[in-house]
Amino acid sequence: MGIVAFSWGGECINNHLTLLMNRDNWENRVISGASWDWKDQILSGRCIDNDGTWFGISKGGRVAFLVNTSLLLDRVEANSGSELYPVRFLEGNMSLDQFANELRLHEKQSNVRHVYSLIVADITSGSMVHIRKPLENESDVMIETVSYGVHTLSPYKGLDSTESPRDSRLRGLFSQQMIVDWGNVQALGEIAGNTEGGRDAVFLETMDEYPSGNLGRLRYGTTSTTALSVRRTEVMVFERYKVSAFNWGEGNNNQLTLLMNRDNWENRVISGTSWNRNGQILSGRCVANNGTWFGISKRGRVAFLVNAEILLDDVDQYTGSEFYPIEFLESKKSPREFADHVARRERQRHNNGYMSDPAEGWSYSLIVADMTLNSMVHIRKPVQAESNVIIQPVPFGVHTLSPYDGLDSTELPRDLRLRSLFSQMILDLGNNELMEEISWRFMYDAEGGRDAVFLQTRDDHPSGELGMLRFGTTSTTALVVKRTKEVMLFERYMEVNGAWTTHDFAFNIQ
Image (cartoon, rainbow, N blue to C red; front, top):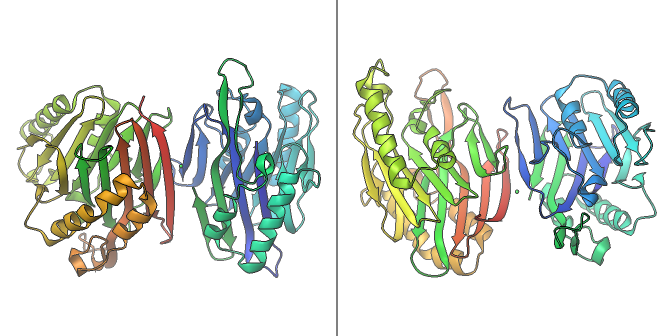
């Protein structure tokens, strides 16, 4: 299911496309937040069960969004279903008419039982098409060009339904916002949270009997909000999925509380936090090497890293310390066993001829923890050119982590300032759960110049070939792991165009 309102603009409108969309599904279905694909060309969320999507946009200017009845009936199968159609369109190069006609032929040949309304658009050509399959047991597909103007999209009635109170409510709220500000995606996101109207609310929240009858009563409702503005000069997307300070197992109701900023050069692209393909590991990624600085798994394994390679922009496609967090999250080793594994690995790299130059070594501080074992270990490699790795259990309490001085540095002004701010915030973050508010305060603390928690500088790139570039904070992560095994995560990260995107996630350790 889902609900969509959008404005498809003409020549007199500054925005080609403005979109507001809520996706609904049963609580047993896991989705991942919007992130770039491995080619860094398509931005979309994904359904973990079939790797399909309800919304996506490509750097080539192709857009697709879908509402269907399969989600209400929970008919989701691997490698099948209408949610694969947006992906197919975004990855292809067919014209809209070619794609629509191919889909019509496919439905006649496959006779899959589903009902959906799909919009496909090409911003560069200024064209948009609505593809609708209205009946489950029939293969007929309706194709129509979408006219300029404000529209809604319904899984049952298609384009511009006047019969559904929910569609009418959304259209009214959306049209009011369009009059005030056509391109404010955050304001649109707030509209999507409107809970007035019960089962006809824009933001749906219900408890019902699961369709198959074997799972009892489950939550069915909104699990994702997307607000999109495609202007004639830029694209903005709003979605509601390096220094660090953390509190490990001491006081209040939380087993772990973490605040972390990642810094890098502007030529390095990162992707926001999202679930991996099997829906087990939640992490952001460095696009250049697919490594990460932070991750948490549903098994209760946590890893976070600060390193010196980022400052030097020494990022290799196939190797680097940013692979260690992923390796730990995927492994079954205890934190101490993994630390010993890392120490052996570093000795091999330095002593067995894996490096032509000792300066190719890494310098980092890595925390690995297992919430179910209540175990946390600090792994520190302080000198790039040497293989020595320091391993220490992390005692309960408040700590900071530095790429240069490891755990609880008392020498660097930035670490001291971070510890002071974190200590002030920890009670609010732990007891009131104001994660977004706290992390915003944390992220925007720019006092202290080059020692600020939120770093914003311009310097000569280390390569000597790229001139003056921005080096600074590109991601903030706030994490709380409660003793009840409930996990809450809030993230804010910088897109390539300098816009900030937010995500939040909640789940339980299994």
